[in-house]
Image (tube, rainbow, N blue to C red):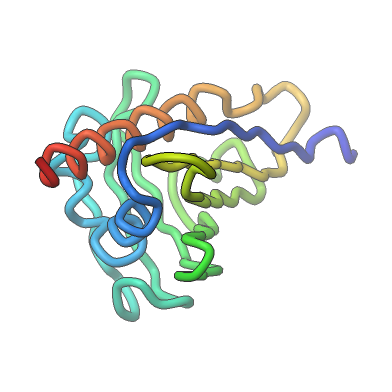
Length: 156
């Protein structure tokens, strides 16, 4: 049974400051569709306020060649650590997974400009035949790079 539990993670190097990257995810995720329109078609607030634990956001996104939706609860938020955790509560991902959490943690690089974005996806599959979400992890990398490109071009 425990083989259905899994975790995939990756790091993305970005040029933008960790605080600015986190601020977009936590307080302005509805702007992501403007900077990563091939991946994110929209993000709406369903409950609560942007950037607060317990708020619910609804994503329209395009992944693996299909339009998909995801309703997510902001489960954890730490502005000092530039960390946010989303728990999927409805949508396409739950067709394959009993539970799915996405944690995004942006850390300033030790020397010089830029940051490291660490993305972790923790999940429990409905059954062992379901693949690990490596393509979704790549999706997160692509969106992170799009956000970075927007933030760094805005600084110029």
